[in-house]
Length: 498
Ligand SMILES: Cc1ncc(COP(=O)(O)O)c(C=O)c1O
Image 1 (tube, rainbow, N blue to C red):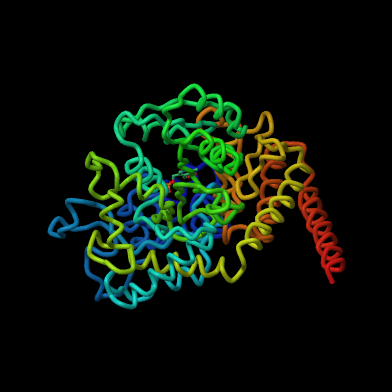
Image 2: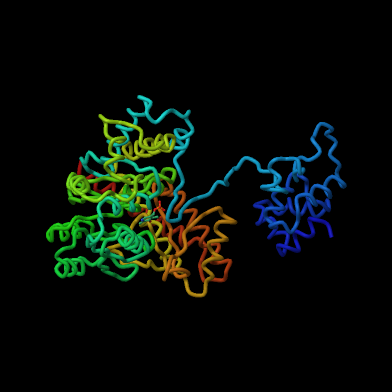
């Protein structure tokens, strides 16, 4: 059996081989006809078959059938390294090449697709993190972050690290050993907050709500009445694991009424739905660059009120993380005293500057409205296919849509087919919702009408292929209808205002 035939045996059919290699079926058919797989596919064959067919076998067979006549090619190339090669002890049979990720439509819970302007900015030449030009950009970056957070807090800046670093930074600085913290949990990320309180030596008081429901303000008030010494209330504004939004303004008011400060997780909410730090009097808040800010992952914008800064300064014990100590990092990010703290991820920060500038150009309110518009169209399409949302309408996040998987459908297979055949990524459910929901994101640059229509169309086609009673085309028609209704309403609103 030649290597082309062995591929068919491994994957089941020529069509399955084509799918695995993301090729047209005609190409695979040609391999079968030629009775060999061209040598340039050797590395891919070894990778995709997980070594069941080695690169060397492909090369040997291909060169026997169709000898390579380029005399100058070194003997060990293109695949399989000689023992003398210093890489051979780390990756014996693999020639490591430049990495080129495929083009994907990212409609999961983040990361999102990235605007070409942001990608271009990121690939600009590196400069030093104390270069005066960079320092000037940092000041603009802080102003742009104040704009998206709607705050005048001087201590508003991006931390070097993902959203989890932002979360940890808040707890490490604000929670001293034995401090009592009310932690609200209605999904995965409230659980992470709880873990942070425990690791800081604080005393957590857990307020639990069902996954898919918002944090109940009454339960928080009751907990504060019972725990008069509670110093902090921590909650997730937009629970990414369920697509549910809690009332950050009311929860903050309740905490303040009882003399507690708040730590708010705005990882998924920032720039997708209103977050008004000053108006709502939020004390400490963190987010992440890869959600509605639509930037490269790895940065966590934070903002702290003066009350928080005072609280941290007054701490008698030494903050147990050097890297996270707010007092030290402040000296790098404050305009006057800029000194070395750690090597800032400069090119990622250029990218964040550009991503925020795009939001500024669009207008924050318009970005929120865009998420709502596409959410309504997506929902209309999903409902036309008979699907239901997990969260009650009032609490649905426009940028994170949790859809209940139809009964009898292999949900993992649907996601796999969407990725392999349509190059679309959607998210799975987590924890108790694993296998029960899909999470379809409409965040930042991914939140576009073409993505909504593509996702509906692909999902409809996959579900109908799997035998579900879905009429292909219904979803797209419903989404178009929803867009049309919104256009009419907008036009009427404009007319009235004129
Ligand atoms: C609500 C919420 N908080 C925290 C995090 C952690 O962020 P990161 O993955 O960037 O560390 C996430 C990530 O998805 C999140 O959705």
